[in-house]
Length: 328
Image (spheres, rainbow, N blue to C red):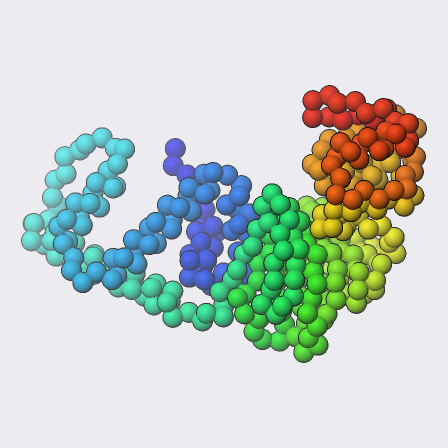
């Protein structure tokens, strides 16, 4: 079965190969590629055609008969052999083939012109963290620590009056101060604007969370904006809008420091953090245990070690059932 044509994706792929895709478009392409092996194969085939078009434009000599035979073989792959009857005299047909080759070469040459002579400052870089956290330094010297399965996209050079990046997943930013050029993050329809500060940004399908450690951060969506100071956070979602609150929790640091600080933390909240960071499936089997609190700091500790401390501290039994872990 032939793969259905996706004209929107085709347009994005062409823009990407020309390095004309915006940050948001680069992110969309990356997400589309990660969705399935079929998408990856489609892109590889698309890129191969692009590369061959460039090679064609640089050739100084064309054997049009050989090229035509190669074309027929490609288009007839997987089809039954059929007898082809010429509709025009051979001489006329040869002229039409030559004209078609010249047209193709001209089109490819124009695409190459756009590709080669584009503005280098428009080049977009896309960084994926994969299965581990990753630290990346941006063109202005700002540093971002990406949590697992996160992506950041930004230009090779910050030009103009702003420094703009796009994020999916979670990242901690330490932004180099520059009052003349604000630092702007686009994430999940939310805009985060700063000058020089450190803060954590986390997004999911349903909401976006921003927690400030130093400096002042402005968070906006749908013409509404809140300003955050240290130890403040905002949660943004469709139903509640922008919800600003004070926070004492430091769980957002866990993925980059390895320290899990519990200060009167209820068991249900600790289980949420463990499931999120270890991709585990822990459930509380007894409702009466949910609000039991724990005060300790786990430092570079494995999940099994943390569960052992929970078991001993709260007198909780830990049962393993395949992928599920039940606290009773």
